[in-house]
Length: 215
Image 1 (cartoon, rainbow, N blue to C red):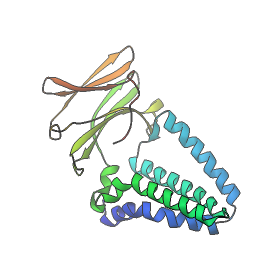
Image 2: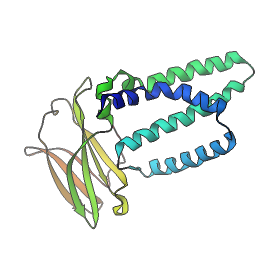
Image 3: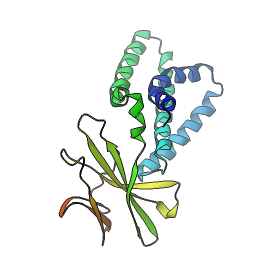
Image 4: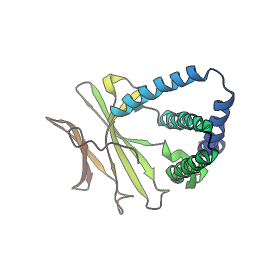
């Protein structure tokens, strides 16, 4: 990815705060804008509830930034509090929380920031007209290098969205392992064994306790 684009993406968390303030102060029709925000957040809530996201991971990252932008703009409503000391305390507290939540992103070198949304397609499987896939994410730039395998499928055959099912992050010592994926069908749904030589290291699939997520 172009380094300038990576740098711009890395800088995004810093830019959100002043941009949200400028939007709060100078963009007109605040009530209509907040109504649109509410509708967008409602849609995102239900998509997250059912683990539906964009197939393009960069779009998912853009959505996360937009949610942070909306939350930051809502926060500036507290600036109307008459006791400014209360607002300053809230601002300091939220600023600290925001920094802590984004510390991993901030401490990642800009040249490697694209690893958060890039992946390779490790394997695919078709069953009953549905396409299942495994995304492999390289986390070699982290303190403890590892890889993450995410199992998902395309809901209703639509390739613009995807449904997350489960994920597995390799433990220490498995970073360079060449895994084999063995798919199987159970009464509870499709499952896939992640195999190292002849040993099943982990099993991903439908019907387990819900653990899907992104590392």
